[in-house]
Length: 435
Image: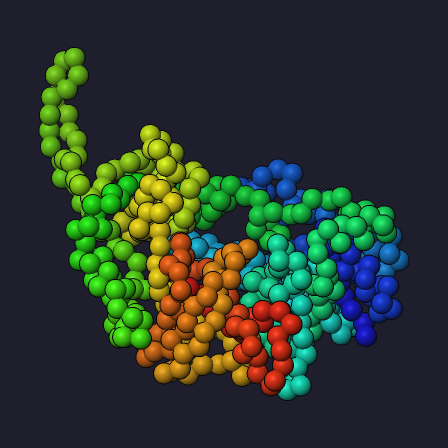
């Protein structure tokens, strides 16, 4: 079998190449360049020229052919433009998931096949399993702190069949040790951070390449808002009942985030200062206060803490909602602020990606699952209900910052594997964009 290793210049892909070579495969390396621009990127992180240089040194050390491919046009069109569009509409995309689906295991795979590759290998910490029915399962990696199956949650069966993950059975410490023992040039290289192939960025500056800065208000939402909210009262009534009694309308209500557009401010004039000049201020509102200004609601995401520029609070302040239409950002004080949490998440049937046909659900069905709504989050227990108005995920424990545009990855519960196969690790069974 001829295998193309996507050599990034990092230690993970370098050790993946080393293992393939040791196992006797016909291996060649290919480095992909996906980004040219430097606007918004932080100097010193993920500079592609340095990465390419290190990758070429690794290939030379291992004695394998090295190739270069420029996929920047495809990356901009299929990943970055999508990212700009999502932020513009007030959603928070995950470009790394898109990069794997659209670039590494599509555009890159096609380029590798032109050079004779039967499969593409990467340095992802995850595993695959071939099943008796001819399908391929995606499993978590052995290292719980590095598992990257979340980033591959949108791969198709065709893509999984062509994928190899040589380091999925290793922990990061073992990978470092193997690299040092083999004296690989990347052995001590730090892990890359930030957006895949772009690097660590100043997100507002990066997004301002296409999205305009428009000043707006930051509204702090007080606890009294929830005490007076009809929606909050309705939610409390639903949550007081057993889940089995919830109607489809109840699920829809619990999945809806708070609107906050009813927090309005009226002004009053007063005389102030040493010359008693006439001034204008907002009247007191028990539901909230204008806590500051921002440069565009599209530059913020739910749960964000940094970059708000709001002081004078005992506890941290977090973004609890954004409204790109009114250009408002809503924040709340404290880790336990009610606006941060939701019990139910809604998905749209057209956004569902089933990893294997045997897991596909139909209207009226329900299933126990384990869910991850962001990378490195511990798996959360939940029940999925497929209803006419959508697919509802009811978490055992309310979840913080359920963010539209992000991907939710669903794993099989233990002892529920089909075909009498005991799961070797939590198997990823489907994924979806959060509505």
